[in-house]
Image (tube, rainbow, N blue to C red; front, side, top):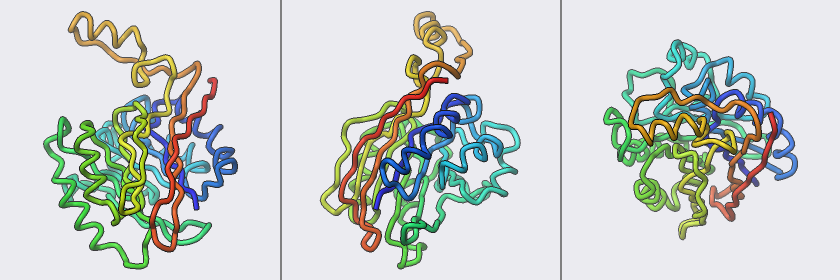
Length: 262
């Protein structure tokens, strides 16, 4: 059985690429379940219910990261959305949920967990290792397929999480850097691991932002508005995970890349 995970979706161009490319990808790759990190889908920062609903026909579950509350009003909207998972290691008083169990039409249930790293990230996040232990204890024993989106900056922290969860989850896929990595592997215990899935954003950009804006900031040290590139060639980065839904063990992991012109 195949599960498709899509890297951070950036802006309207990224949303359009998901809408246009993912339905055909599901058929081509025989992917029965699709998860996408959408924390940059609304103008490059945060999420809105409207943006998510545009992509819902193509994506089963959306995850988020450190930009989850960037859009005004999403703290209310998330309460009405049953297919959105925000980082589980945020304060428990924050709305939304960090773990959900979803039915896979091809067979079995899929648990999706979102976690946020601590290294070079927000100090307000709790220990993700302790948090994931608690979540796994709370999951029904019948749920074998478990996907973890680890939204973190440091590859060392991501890889440590991969080994920590090896044999306990189906996959640990990193997000946040918008740069796809080439270290996809099946760990000894049967967990698929990748440091970063990449992004759905402009091919000519710096992490989805206008090149000139980013260069100005780096070369002058002055604050600058970093505009999102919404048109041109949009690159869709994703990863395909093949697994046994009866055991939850992964058998293969491979990168997926497509392009779409807006």
